[in-house]
Amino acid sequence: MPKIRVLVVDDAVVMRKLISEALSRDPEIEVAGVAANGRIALLKMPQINPDIITLDVEMPEMDGLETLRELRKTYPKLPVIMFSTLTTRGAEATLDALSLGASDYVAKPANVGSVTECLERLRDDLVAKIKVHCRHLLPMPAAAPVPVAIRPVVTPKLAAARTMGVPDAVCVATSTGGPNALAELFGHFPANFPLPLLIVQHMPPLFTAMLAERLSKLGSVKFCEGAEGQVVEAGRAYIAPGGKHMEVRRSGLQVVLHLHEGTPENSCRPAADVLFRSAVTVYGGNLLGVVMTGMGQDGLRGCSLIRERGGQVVVQDEISSVVWGMPGSVAQAGCADAILPLDQLAGEITRRCRRRA
Image (cartoon, rainbow, N blue to C red; front, side, top):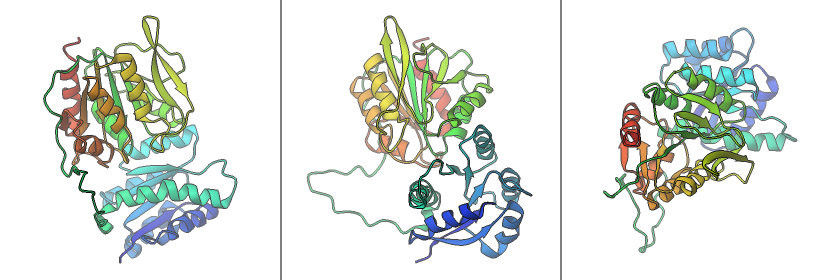
């Protein structure tokens, strides 16, 4: 069976060895080659012909951003996963890389006590993303036997028509492909949007603050990274900080944010389900849930709660999603009132919230 061929590009010998070791342990992946900088990687491309590249952000001679620019001239569709440090500089460079066409990113393991732990972290973070972006190269999994009592949902379906509450707030969940999807979404948003926006984007610390700063520059909505006790105001967007769950709570006549480092849900912290669950408690059925591109099923339980209370749910469609895991799980469970391409989401959200304005 053919394997996913990976080119590992990193200036640090130790990181090249660790990444290669972590990838080589998976039977569906092989390291086709390594390179110490972008210039060497570009020279090796025609001979190696990789299926995907892991690309360090900070390298001498030719760094990750310059390498990515050159790669995209000849290989516009080749998946590229950026490797960055958990620093402000690393976060900024990673967001630059995503805007230049990088497929995804992985934060370099930090404060890891042993080689074994480092390899496990790389396996958990990197291998899964490689397989997602190269899923067309993997064999289709065999269908598991389904008990007669269970009726599997095999195609996306819209929620049944019903009476729905008028939104008082909008909750948004996204992961893989999310930074660019959020920029596209809010690039088409009206400047006078009347409701608060509560957002979970699966990212590490520092990255979410940088993302909020960049999205604010779009000029439609003012973004910030959520802070403990912050009052939730109409027309503003709050992004859950990396590494912390974000919830909303009533405090007198106001709604405020509450942050905590509780147990990860869906292997995520922040998790959309945590935010959505708290939002249902505060807003009841007057809530609009939006689920966009991302791996896994985070947001599914929260959307089920929103619908149970009479709220509305809109998800991004499969064609426009980088990964149709999160929105797909909601759609296939029949919890979506609308399934739309990314370029139509802003108009749909605005329309559904217009009555409140």
